[in-house]
Structures are given as structure tokens and as C-alpha cells.
Amino acid sequence: MLVIVVENAPPRLRGRLAVWLLEIRAGVYVGKTSRRIRELIWDQVHAGIEDGNAIMAWTTNTESGFDFDTLGANRRIPVELDGVKLVSFLPPQAPDGGLENDFKSA
Image (cartoon, rainbow, N blue to C red; front, side):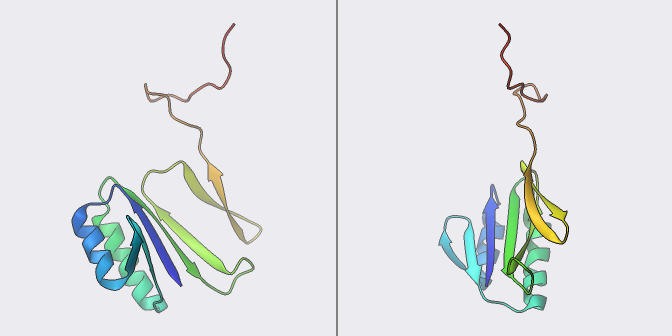
């Protein structure tokens, strides 16, 4: 099983993904492909994502039963810890580009 989710992707990339995978919801593509085809599809996402972001998850022989890769700017980043891939969150960005402070001054 292969799942690709794209956000802010150009229409030509979304159309390209729809050739190989089934778009079950806007920007969510699923299918069953070989490793080689999965890598070719991900290369197409790399080439066409522009300012958007994407995540690809697929079944594999790991402890969790799947693996994933991300592309583009996103607060969620993959982190490997003792052979298990987890998701870490970056701090939110303030409108001025700095980090938001969760503490309010009195």
C-alpha cells in the first residue's frame, strides 16, 4: 500500500499523481505499487512540488509495518530513534518569522 498526501501542489503534479494512484480525497492518493514505481513517483513529486509539501507512506517490513518520507516545509519532521521513525514538531512560527512564545507577559 502506498499513500501520498500533498498540500499546495500545482495542478499538473496532482494530475500526474492521478495517473498512477487513486485520488480518494483532495490531495490524498493511494495505490499499490512496486518499490521501483514508488521511487519513480516520489521523484516526480520532488520535481513538481514547488512551494507545496508532501508526505509518502508505504508498507514495509519494519517493526511498525510502514515507513514514510516527507518533502517541503512542514512543522512535522521525521526523526529516527533506535530504528523507529517518529514525528517531531517544530515550534510554531510567529507572523514576523520568529518563534511564538507560549508564555504571556503579565
